[in-house]
Image 1: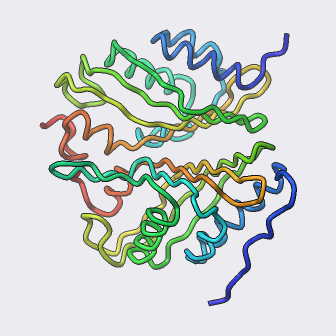
Image 2: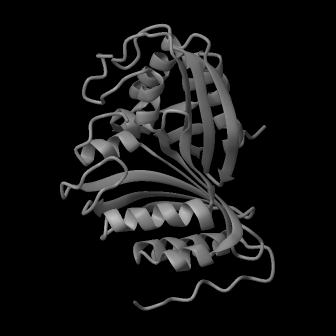
Length: 143
Length: 163
């Protein structure tokens, strides 16, 4: 049975939702190009995507993802995703203050065959840091 | 300023090609900093949401959510005032037959006057944005949402406070 680009992306999101990074990455090609703009990850690979997902999954053990929309545009699938959770460990340099995170993000996937071959991720790092009670972007570890 | 008429509205459901062309015209108008034409290409009640745009005041949070003709025009005009050479470089534009169009682009410009809490220092931005738009069957844009990293914009302009 042929798997559609949307189904491939939904499989990725299911793995992410369950904090099962390996399951999410099973849908990603080894040669995938990954850009996560707010983290200055630009045209990197699967390993960098793995690190981002691991960081989120481990810092927010009650991770909750809400899909606002999934837009199919041929090989391109765009997902609007709210990421929520309570911080339980340090996250990207921000010390743990047990703050609740809710951040709206957009993920633009390119799917080739049945694999994700590219993704660009957008969210506002100011919104993220604000929710984690960080005051300055050059002093993330100081509250 | 030369006025370019908006793309005529098709009489039938817009195809992906129609929707992409209409949105391309919209970004051309944005590049010309022609806010009136941008608004004219939208329905009277078009939804508008600039997701990262939020200002935390003491008792409420102001967000970039509302309608094109109220919030959208104000934000666009404010941006153009602060960045007189405001531009956009489109990297990809994808559409489908449901009227959905997604644009990945850089918003560019050099700050010449205050923007939000940021005093002008003559600094420039090249900020990656993702715009999600919807074109209705009459060929008018009825929804605009945008995502970007406002921390990057603030840093580029020399503002390191989160708020």
